[in-house]
Image (cartoon, rainbow, N blue to C red; front, side, top):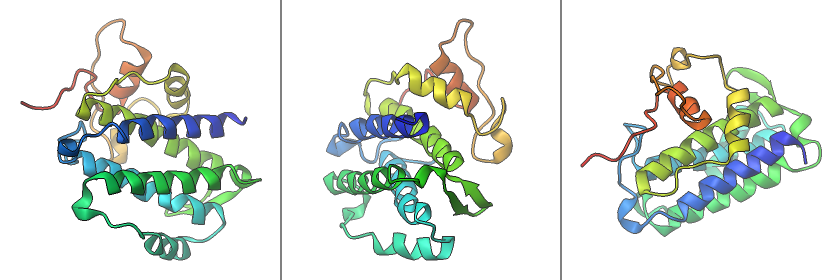
Length: 200
């Protein structure tokens, strides 16, 4: 299988395992993304993966946005609970089908920054899946260790080099201990403290 597709599906698998490990009392728990609860984080990935099918089919942003709005078929119940996990499963299945369709990965997608190779778009989605899998694991007390090949792929395809804070999406890189693992170095580059734990 194409490496980008394999890593996309691996990232989805990691995030899905953590979503299904969330207990009912953890949906409003804090995460390493200081402005997001667990429910906010899962909702972020749901929205991101809802966009993939229409974009990979060649729709422009306006048309894709209408499809995304029309796809919100399941009740959210205040943004928490088992039905939010179901929404993730629905969005993930749709994006997995879209990225593995014949020729999809070799197309171009219409993003806010303009036409973008689908491979670049998917690498960015793998980045989000990987980093947010760690965020979610830390928030709910799940095994935080990510597959080595996934971490290596993301580090090799970082959206930028070294300091990501210039994008406005990340904090300044965090210093890590000597001999830090590759996963710790990746997290630190995104402004995350690998030793983060929930407050209290």
